[in-house]
Amino acid sequence: MGREFRFVHCSDIHLLSLQGTGPHRFLNKRFTGGANLLLKRRKGHDAALFDRIVEHAKRLEVDRLVVTGDVTNLALQSEFELVRRKFDGAGLPITVIPGNHDTYTRGSAKKRRFESFMSQHMEGERLDENFYPFAWTNAHLALVGVSTAIPTRPLSAVGAVGDEQLQRLDSLLAELESRGLQRIVLIHHPVAEGFAKPGHELLDLEAFGQVIARRGAELILHGHEHVLLDYALPGPKAEVPVHGIGSGTSMSVRPGRRASFSHYTVDDDGISREVWLFDGQDFRPVTAAAAE
Image (cartoon, rainbow, N blue to C red; front, top):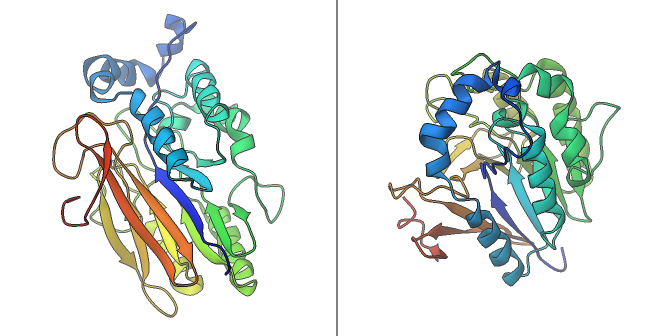
């Protein structure tokens, strides 16, 4: 491979801004989401922790920051404006995919608000005019962005890839493998049974698993559950490791649910990971056992 490639993975940063948002914006699913935000989520996240992650990523001299969705709370334009300012001012390349909170309402999905504000951070190869999946590539590596973000009813946080996107993903993974690239799939929802709470599941995880079983990948990264997860999916030659990361801005002190990010190194020997946890003052690297 030559030189190694290093990146930081974080997720579920839930940056909040209600600036200029009128009450009429809450006359939909946001009514329940807004109540939850005021009563619980707003106190459970500290946006300053995302700034800390960016600072650490730059100190680690990584090549890229990867964010696997839920960059907002309610998919408001004011929130996306804040996220774009944060991303554009980060001082390092970013690849991002959407989460369920980023298509919180049918209106935000129909207007493709996420793609409108985040398109410069989703650059990559595509098979056709469809936005997903996409693949950011260099000479040795592909970051494959998949969307599971769909608008849902109140109190639901399910996701779906969809048949058409799955077909494109199948073709894209095969094409990237033919070029000898190490393929890292980015997705928001957990991709196996038992890792998502009821009402939080990936609806077509079996179909997604069939694509991975047929085409393989070198790594799958996700967020969504705000907890550190480590499991695997069957691949055509070997198991494909799956890593879930906790919320990057969580203020929880519960084991496995503290704010976290992962630092990855990709080289000729494969892919290695170092987990960093927030200890109340700063993010620090920990052993795998201590991260649980």
